[in-house]
Image (tube, rainbow, N blue to C red; front, side, top):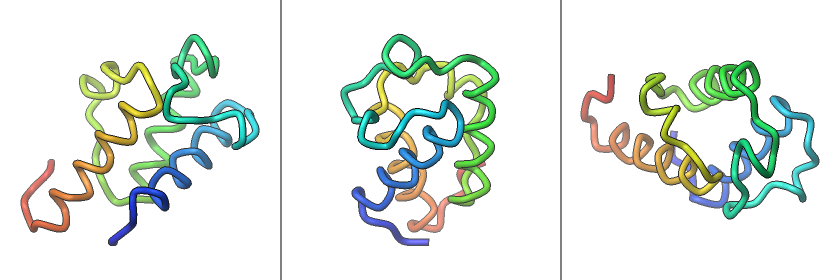
Length: 91
């Protein structure tokens, strides 16, 4: 699957909307996942599972714990998608 950064950002915003119930216009790259958007551990798991399923990538728990801003998640997922396109094993 090849997505532009904007398409990827939209998928992440939809995932966040589904996990935390915030409207998409309230979600931006500079928002903190926990402090600004209220992402708790249950919602984080829901988000990770949705992104893994939708995008066909794996996000290990130890990596997911490092995300502070929406941009961190977007950069990470974008990197994973690049690795997938390059044919490298990302698991």
